[in-house]
Image 1 (cartoon, rainbow, N blue to C red):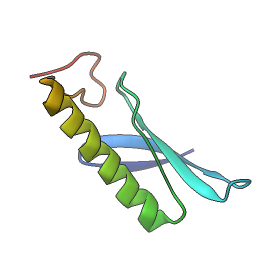
Image 2: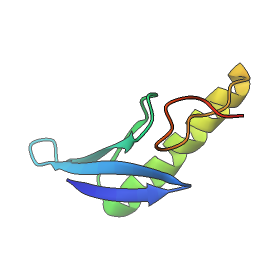
Image 3: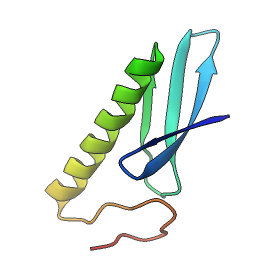
Length: 75
């Protein structure tokens, strides 16, 4: 399993040969953030976009986002 980093988050990344697509999931938090792409560049952008979406979602709910390796929300 490979790793990618973006905006302080770490993700595991794998290639699905049958679907011909890369997919990833953010590690170290209880919330689920996933992303996918058909190229490395697309995968990197999808990871950044997914993190941005997560941060915006938390802001809309008035919650502090979880940060890597933390088990609870922080202010």
